[in-house]
Structure formats: structure tokens, C-alpha cells
Amino acid sequence: MRAIVLGLCTAMVLMVRVADAQMPLPAAKPPDGATLFKQQCAVCHTLSLSEPVRQGPPLVKIVGRPAGKVEGFHYSDPLAKADFAWDETRLDAWLSNPQAVIPGATMVYRQAKPETRAAIIAYLKEQN
Image (cartoon, rainbow, N blue to C red; front, side, top):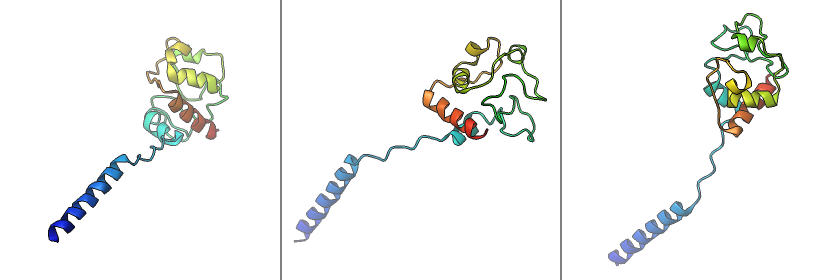
């Protein structure tokens, strides 16, 4: 009798393990724009004019702002001479390849994933 009970318990444990192995894991939630900004942008940029300037200019109200025109930040010559305002399309291109948007730009960050760029841009728009 003991052998039968032990055999049944072992079989039940194996069935539970097989069922667990076949259950799909919940999909991972992609990082939101705020998290991505903190991970990938905040090393060089702030979202406040009251914080000390970092390696890059503050990005407060970047959407709609003229490129290369933040008071107190020294831009590279090519960026200082830019003649456009930042919009979603330009920001997307910039985050993908800054040198393609403004040859000679000094920003080295590139983001290949469109969904990551979109999340960061959406977050920046929220900050306007």
C-alpha cells in the first residue's frame, strides 16, 4: 500500500511539473519612457533648468524648442547653427543617428529600437 501511495504522489508531482513547464510566462512589460529616460538619457541630460548642466543640454520643453538654443549651454558649432525646432520626427531621427541629422554633432548615443525611441519621445512630450 505504501508503495502505491508513494507512486501516486510521485506521479502527481511530475504532472504538476509538466503543467508548470507548459504554462506560458506572462509577457514582460516594456519599460516606460520615464524609466528609459533615466536609464539612457539622464546621465547626460536633465529635465530641469534649475539642476546643474550636465554633458548635454537640459531637455525641458524640448518638443517645439529651437535646436541648439538653451541659455547657458555651450553647443557644438553645427548644433548651434541648426535652423529648426525639435518635433517628434526630428527627435526620432536624432535618437537614431544624431550625425545624420546634424553632421558634426557631438552626441554619440544611438538607439536602434523604434519602440524605445518612441517611448522616450512620448515621455519628453509629457514634460512640455
